[in-house]
Length: 168
Image (cartoon, rainbow, N blue to C red; front, side, top):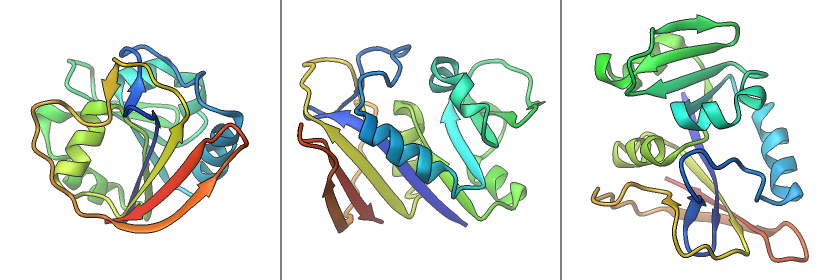
């Protein structure tokens, strides 16, 4: 199974201004990259709040929503739910027998996959913005040390949006 993480962030490392902030701040070029990339995956994995913010988009794909909230596990169309408190995400992904998984956040989900070294590639879009505060890619307080291998960098537009690709 191949697991790839996708994140867009500001120059100062923020993926959102608050937990219900959508992705309306990212460039059209990043949105196009992500839409095209999602067509290649068997499953999209997102956190509960991330799903709430963009459920219309995620509902178009087979999607696994990860949560620590008390929600009933099960399926609603192409969307299924998994409670972190009731099992191991790695076991759940193996049981689903999918070949390609895209992880799209948020902070808790990125932190967990990075901490467990449960990914093959990391695609980071850096948007030329500074917010000074907001949600980071990884939870504060968690020690996550990863050494990545640089694969490539692409400039997506004239404004300076950059797509970075690393392998684990």
